[in-house]
Image (cartoon, rainbow, N blue to C red; front, top):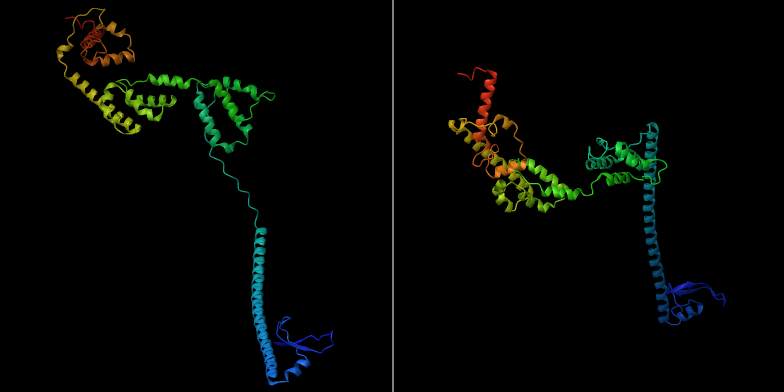
Length: 382
């Protein structure tokens, strides 16, 4: 397309037109006087020149419209940005007003006191440790550890905890830890755990587990012993001896009395937990003792009067009141053997119980007669 070019200063030529908006070296058409003369030589050339000029005008109009469209879009975008800026300025001014109002309100109100953390509930202090016997060192140690753990926020630092442990000792125990608490101590305590460890090395029995195992091994339930009494002892010794939980049911069954073992053998072999098995043993033991008590009462009520008839005895026989008073007290093992052999606890004869013993009944009658005679000397004379 033709367009007007700058004057050619080198050749002194006047303005020239280029028919292309963006011409290249190959496509440029220079509208000079010579070109116009040449264009008017023939109608074809004149038509061609006219088309060039018309095309240039059309390109100019399209370019103008494009520039106008871009200008309008730019103006619209600028207006939108201006509106956003105005909104931001208004929001800033509103926030500034709110902030100023809040600052004025805080300036009028008093400053609140700082919130302090609430301390844990204080638990009772452990007893004073003296010789490791009363209280026992093991119980005292557990109480001190629980106190320092639960009420840890009551102690500022390790020095406060060391001082607290010292206050819980007296006598022999205090003398053991005193040298390392003095100002010129060669090896002072740095933590309360060191104090407890020192006392533990003195008072804790290194063979406590071994001794507990031996004591647990000797434990057996006596036939006359209530199950709950035996079971309490069983749990205590098994814990001290560190018996595995999987072995407790087996150990409990083996330590029961023979009568109770016979009654609970089915539950022992059943797949029930230890706690359920122990509860069942307690119920069966109470039932057996209730049955035995009822049987003993029935035997007492059915005794014949002839069994109470006294027979002459000498002063050296067990039926003598003096001999009965001087009878040595039987041990638990002796009572167990007599019970298992179905022997009398009084005369040690087989076949009856002490409550049915004729020797004991005779001794009781003789004693009553002697007491009545001593109170009224004439009562025994005809």
